[in-house]
Image (tube, rainbow, N blue to C red):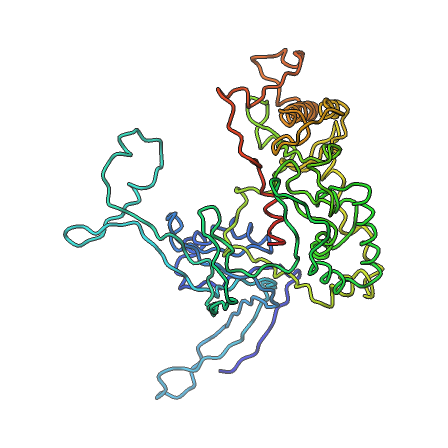
Length: 507
């Protein structure tokens, strides 16, 4: 073929996205529906961490998606045109005349991002039943609820349909390394298994060597575990670590009990080094009024009534229609939300940068590195609102763990100090405080928060049926008062998800 080529450059290059579709496209509209439409592709493209999902059956809720990874690229989309014309060669014996012409190319745009489907499609499970005569019948119209149904609908007999218990969490083949048998020393006995905890029995203990104490234990430890001292002295030897060690010593000298958030708000230290430093100065309380707190070695709060002010208060912001605002109307966001949950296969999680031995020895970039001047001295320090409650300020999270001494409100301190000088007994539920002290504190704090939300969003508390609601005095409705009988107390009962998260760092 002979001809000349002409390339036409666009006046303005348009950024474009390429999707390598794993199939033969015969209908562009149906193809786009499997990707969620143009809006779905645009929504995924706006988040670099998301993977593009492809559903071969978009209307099937049981369809398992294929996921495409996002890659940067530098390619162009060309439109090629070839102009041809028939020309007789003059030979009467020639049946097919030769073709000649010019080829023109036009750059439509530049592709900067490409989505490639590199994984396996996994299982596709269909809801159907086999008839007596052989053909398969779909069950979607019988198992999917599209409108409210009466009670008779749920008592009808339908074929048994049991989907797989779980689909694969990975869409790429991986090598599975089987764990070898564990060789124990002579005389080792397997731990007693119970229904409370069946996880983590075969995992190696993390080498942080923290000491845990329950409320009912006898004596408290007076010195750290030798391995904890060895780890801190071995890995933390630079002047920055020495300075942080002195600051931590000063904190526990002026106050024997601290929460981890309170420490992180007073000292700027890398979290990986904090895991090594805390077991060097304090032990961890698992249960009782000081649960989830770090206590200085040798100090027993159960024998010291002055430790009352260091007790922990598990406080949660109450919400609901009876309080005048719903969770969605609350100015305080939740730490975690199931509405924003993404499947592991649909999210490109960045690989965390491993902390090497050299990083720990040299202060994780705080000293001896080229970027040491760029790092602020309070890089890892938290705001004081993570552990201090003040009147007029909303907590940063809907669930908070406060120490009583960090409730900086006079009315709250009056509730705490009602029995000052007459503390006779330390109980696991109330510690050195009077019974129901925690309930009174929660009620007062909830009323303060309701007043703050009312001032910031007054429209939430006004309704056509009650125009004079704002003129009425603020009254608090306690959720416990609606129960017919008091809930039975279990030692250390309550939300301990934050404590369990901290325990995972050491167990």
